[in-house]
Every structure is written in C-alpha cells, then in structure tokens.
Image 1 (cartoon, rainbow, N blue to C red):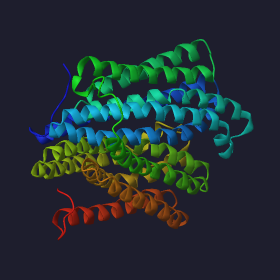
Image 2 (cartoon, rainbow, N blue to C red):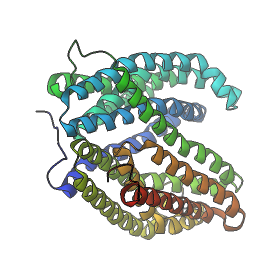
Image 3 (cartoon, one colour):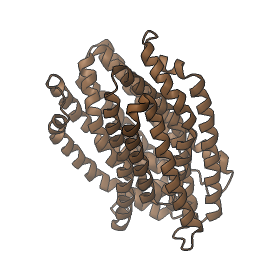
Image 4 (cartoon, rainbow, N blue to C red):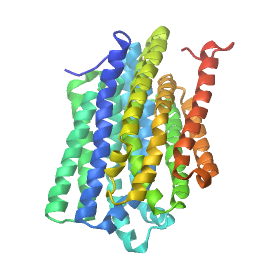
Length: 448
C-alpha cells in the first residue's frame, strides 16, 4: 500500500518528526556518498581527474537549481491540493510538471552539451584537464531528464506525506553507483567516462523506480490519459513558485563563491581548515533543513484544508524541534571540535587543527540560529510565500559576505562564524517582522 499521510489531523510533533527523519537520513547518506565517490575517483583515476570532476560540479549545480526549483514549487501546490482533498487538481499538477519537464529537461540537456566547453573555459579551467572536464560534464548532462523526473516524482510522493519511499530509491541508486564505481574504476581501472556513465545510470534507476512505484501503487498521483496534458494556469503558478525558489537556492552558491575569495587570501592552512569545518557544518545543519521541509509540507497541506489554528501549532512545534536539535548539536560539536577536524587532516597538521578548532569552537554557539531561520522559512514556503524566502536568504547571504570582508583582516578564521551569526540574525529580524505584519498587523494579507 502507498504511504500517503494526511497531516491535517493527528499528533503534530510525531508527524513532523516521522516525516523529517527519512529526509535527514537521505541527505546524510548523500553527503557521505559524495565524499566516498570523490575518494574513489581520486585514488583510482588520479588527482587530475578528481580536479576535472570537481570543476564540473559547480556548473552542473547551477543547472540542477532549475529542476529542483520547479519540483519544489510543484510540491507546494500538490501538498495544498492533497490537504484540500482536490484529487483532480493534484493529478493535473502531476501531468503539467511531467509534460513540461520532458521539454524543459531536453532543452537543458542540449544547452549543457553545447555550452560545456565555453562554460568551463569561462571558469579558467587549466588546459591539462579541460578536455576531460568537458567530456565528463557532457555525459552528466545526458542524465538531466532523469534528475528532473526523480526530483519531480519524489516531490509528489513527499507532498502526500511519503518521505520514506524516495529515500529507499535514493539509497538503491547510490549503492548502484558506488558498487559500479568500485568494480569498474577501482577494479578494472576504467576512466572518467565510466565515472560519468555510472552516475547517469544511477539517476535513471532512481527516476524509473519513482515513476513505476507511482503508476503501480499511488493512483492518487497517476493522471489518466485525458488528464495528461499541461494546464496553463497551473504551469504559471508552478513556474512562479519554482523560479523564485531557484533564485533563492542560487544565493548560497554565489555567496560561498565570494567568501571563498576571502578564505584563499588567508593561506593554505586556513583554506584546509575552513573546507574541513564547512563539511562538518553541512552534516550538522542537515536535520534543521529537513525539519523545515517537513514544516513546509505540513503547512501546505493544512493551508489547503483551511486549518489556520493547526498551522500556528505546527509552526510552534517545528521551531521547538529546531531549537532542541540546534542546542544539542552545538554541545556535540563544541565538545568534539578537534576530533572532528582530525577526521579530515593528519594529526601532524597542527595549524590546520588549531584553525579548524577556532572555527568550530565559535560556530557551535550559533547552530540554533539557522534552526529558527529554516523553521520560519519552511512556514513561508508552505504558505506559498516564496518571495519572502528569497528576500530572507538574499539578506542573510549579503550580510554574511559583507561582514566576512569587514572582519577577516582582524579576526582571521573566526570572522566566518561571526559573519554567519550576523546574517542569520538579520534574516530572523526580517522574517519576524514579516510574520507579525502578516498575522497581527492592521492589514493582514495572509492567514497564519
């Protein structure tokens, strides 16, 4: 039986926790897999090929923003329709994003293949690895349709409360990719072409499993033959939400790129410490982001059902979960900061360990702040207020970049956690003012 869960009734803390846990496990698994995949390429193909794969990554990420933005926009609408019991509109939305996605992903694939070399040249990729990076990137772009359809159909499943099944398919695809890499690259010593093709095969498997599951087990999300066409009004709403979401997601990579310039000016030891600490941040913040995703689905379903009081209760519960986790992970990271940095570098790299400890020793005090910002953003996203999420993220990124450059000369590596704190506080202030005006102001423009 399909695992659909209606969040318009029942125990709120349990629903948020049960929904968020598979998302957390999936993200942690993906992070770990990416590290292992890089290790396989670096150890068995060589540092040049590892550099080529790493160079192609940022380009691919920009293109993926478009597909993930559309799927997130569609997810809000699908959750709303599911909560309201509007099954016909739900199937129309699935059909709309499917038909549109077939054309959209085909165009992205063509643009990526044709533009791979100019894009990489604009990033000043060294000539000795340029050819390999171009080949890798072009092959990866062949998997763009699979990436789109996995994102779309996994979002559809999550919108009806099923966050477990997409996790199972993600793990299956990642295991296929990892085992194939170990056999074909580690054992048989095939090169970078094989690395790209195994990635595409894994993407194809995850998309195929999602589609087959929905068509076999979830008739609620299966459009009929007459329904399988684009609905102009729904597409306009989806692209409106998705476009703003893609811009929001682009803020962080752009900000990180600007901050990396300040990091590079501090020398190799700080660069190594910062990159190791950033990996730890990624792991630490995964649960907060996925509690936020659970809050989005919860809010969207209850918004569709018109449950204003339950939305407020969900927001309070979600923020308490975020705070509890934030304070807990702060204690863990602060207590184990040197051990955590030591996972990435040799114990003889004393300066890297020292700088990494300084970063984490200060950042550990601030982990509760992104819990609050993620929680409020999850609420806004579930209500369909994408422009507010964009404004908050842009403000946070802008303040973070500004204060890094203002403070880095005096504070060294500690300027990075301080600048994050300033950015999160600015974002909280904006989100708090917006929430108050929307819900308690004289001219309320949206329900709670």
